[in-house]
Image 1 (cartoon, rainbow, N blue to C red):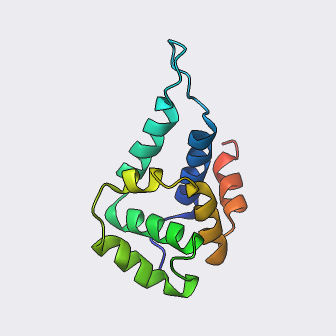
Image 2 (cartoon, rainbow, N blue to C red):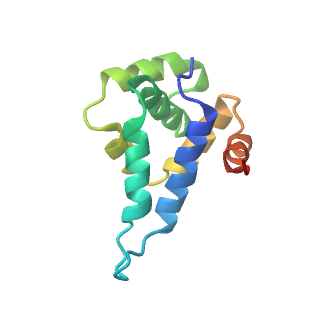
Length: 123
């Protein structure tokens, strides 16, 4: 069972796309640092509990075809047992993180577009 909400997955996808595109990459000094979005994404991932982080990694692995959607439980368990570095460092080192997360959500029958729309809907 997936132990992270579609909204949290969507949040990571949105921030990962911003990070990859360089949004918020200009500091007040005018130097390109990528610090704003990078720090926010890293802090968000780090704030997730262990089960949520393992599910996030599992969805990414399913999206890049390391595991099939039918192997979700095994992917989550593997993410927990094979963790060697902070999850945020591992995931942010993946150049296609947003694409893999979207593909993983779709493979699991979760609409990434719907989750992203729900997340961005005005309150």
